[in-house]
Length: 264
Image 1 (tube, rainbow, N blue to C red):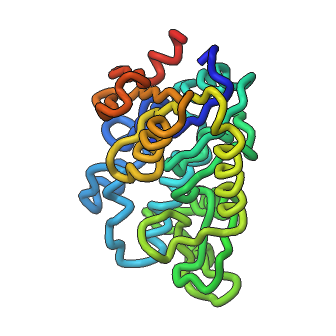
Image 2: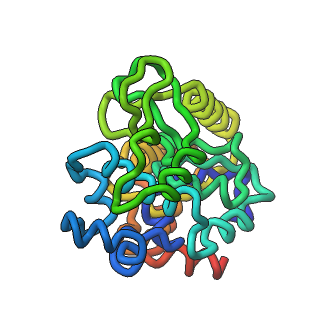
């Protein structure tokens, strides 16, 4: 870390898990025991796919989900520790996470690219346009006003352009909206890579897996192989490895990310 000219951080679900954003067990029971009892939901993630009978029930669940995973701080200071390590470096972050933990920890928004969306944004379910809408205010109202796992009908969100139901700005199919902010971030990331190609670069892979490997892991492997002065480093409990072609340029640590960052 000390010897590199720049760092590209690629972050996946394992980083937020290390920070305490777990979707099962005690944390799930704390916030969703009523939904578990009524609907048989076993964890937060699977609950997001539950076919609720009404939009009032659907948004009661999702507003609570968004509130605790987007607007509450992570239970552990893993992102804060990471910022301390790179804040004096030339860095960029590309992440498949949608919980906004980087920005909440103080990372500069100009150097963040959230490829898969943001829990804090709504979009038209059609979609009728490539626009997204901040949802913090209405999500807070949904959480505060829901009763018996239903929100008031007047809080059910509809697209202000066409009137269709709103949905989350999360990449799950071809209806995902890549708005102007998304494209600007993609351009900044591409420009950062162009400017640093001939420099000593660290590709730091934190918690990415094989759900969407082309976005971070495979691209980091390719660039580490092609760039003459690049190093690939991966910290991920249970999934820290590198292909044979770049073994000599790789550092893989099979351990909890937060614990490792504390020691750096």
